[in-house]
Length: 118
Image (cartoon, rainbow, N blue to C red; front, side, top):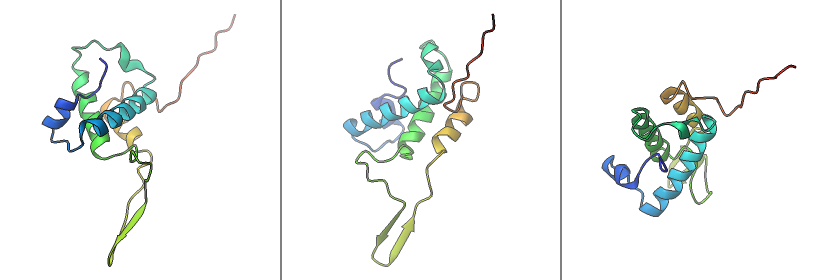
């Protein structure tokens, strides 16, 4: 499977990004999910039911913009008139979602290596 979430499915789920921005966010989400699962999802068959979870996981990462903004202008706080908003850190949120959705595949980005003794 090339994409974890297609643009058509994203729109069905009421996504609001245009196709160009969606494509970029989907790629970032897919790369992060693959990193956190050590690319083990690439071995799944196209009809594996796990793809439904992966699709929803990808949607949530994109919708919540957990990997930052495409323009690189991520911020922790903003002001509009008399109103000031401070955003909570998104660090670790993707890791937690991947661990929740794919506990058997989550590796935390750490590759375990065995030592062979001869």
